Length: 60
View: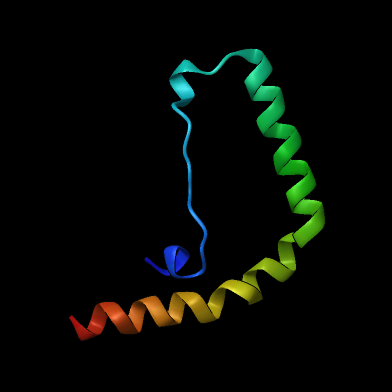
């Protein structure tokens, strides 16, 4: 729900069906995004949305 409010979506892949080529592509994407966003910095950035989701879940 939080992602939809931001105009984002999550898509998944059936890893049992992936080929070597798509595995390489996923590794490449992971590498670029990890470098772009920084793994250490991402922990700080996700604390606020997680807290908001926890507050929302506690309210229901």
